[in-house]
Length: 308
Image (cartoon, rainbow, N blue to C red; front, side):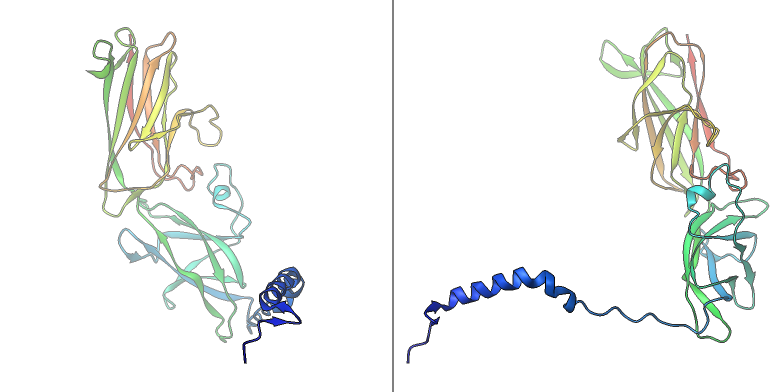
């Protein structure tokens, strides 16, 4: 017997197409019935008055820190930009302490999420601070001890640097920056390329991302900037209130590791009537931190002489 290829005189292919269309139209109405039920929330016996535990590691030395460190805990409504700000005065919710018996930093906390600020309190400070989020879960343990997530917070030590400069004046005859000079002499020349070189030192030490500032000089305009060969916007900051810094600047938005060499290139042009003076370059590393209580380090600097 021949295979039947229609139903009620209508080809099977049309029936299949009709079924697909019906499913497509009705799916939005049916789909809620096919969504799997959410997993039942885990219920813990203890969720308040917990002993929250975590470790703090110095990644430069790969050693756990047990002293000479302040660990403050804040609600998640406070962000890093708040806590690092020059004007920040809010007190922490609590301060953790190191428990040698437990081998961890501990704080009495309820289950939930928190932000933690870790800062160096050594007499001679070496470590940048860090601001991280942690989560504390409930527990059924009668001791009410809980390891936070993450269970280890990380800090790094600040590198050191040597800043040098090379100045090339515009050679109008050769149409290139090919005249080596020591100053920006605006009587002899009208354009310059200044290369600042940052030779960093310290294995597994870092300069955290920041800004490179240089003094705004009358009659001289920066026209282009490059950070490690990549063109960067040259911006002008006239408000000293957040950071005590003013002038032109470029961002370096990546951490620099000790042992690396980085360059900042700025092109200047004479655009008015310059005045003799000193242009200061300032390497504002870990620029986000402006609180005096937190920013223990001094920015690296070098100078360029502007003269007639």
